[in-house]
Image (tube, rainbow, N blue to C red):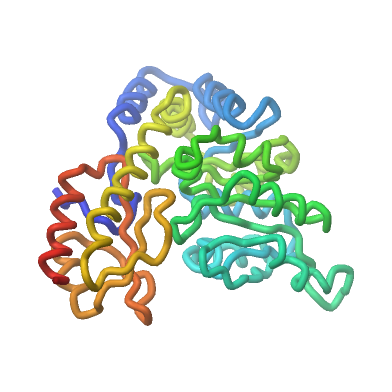
Length: 342
């Protein structure tokens, strides 16, 4: 078995309660392509968290959740504004541009967070047929740098976007971590804050290849059935995606998993921040720790527990914790940091 590491919360396995839900869903036959009771139940669970109008569509991975959701609300002559480090800009292999036809307009965000003041310079071409037309502002919660938008910050962005006829999209790969960090329900950071559409991450929080596209107000989802099918994300045995979301969101598993991952990140930060040569570069607000490490020590540390170098130029690394990270994992790695770096 591969030892636990700190490269990504994607490296963690599926939670036992999720596996149990999959086993239960495996009994007997069910209608295919989402026409089954479990899928109906899962969509109702999403309404409990995001509001009675919320419309959820299940897919296999986060790239599809982002791209197909954006495709439902854009046309190829339009543009999507995002941070320069956004997953849709950096880590989706051009899929947003290819499948939506839209231009991405990245904004430099040192802490990963867009702000209303970032928008006006990008909106001067509205109505000019020679320029792409901004249509969506996309943010990530928690951000790619582990920081968290408050509900007020999201509402301010939503208001600024809506005032210009734009929509607000939220990449919620780690939305659960952000909500637990802020001690808020999911809808407080989405529906109630003016978010128009979002992707909801399950895989990073203990699921087995299950993500969701959510339209909190129901609007925009009319073509989603066709977009999902054409995007090759319509599961024939949809009940196995649905069962996982029922396990995650039907009780408090999403909070337990995210809360544990967040606590492990804080613990790791506490145990390494006093080591000479280690500098934390971002506040630890979710389940990621970003730090500068002397470059000559990185290979030896990666042999102890693999992680990614986030920025080779500045020797900044990223350490991610997950629902299954243990205090012993943290203690062992922190000891390695003290031994090797010191």
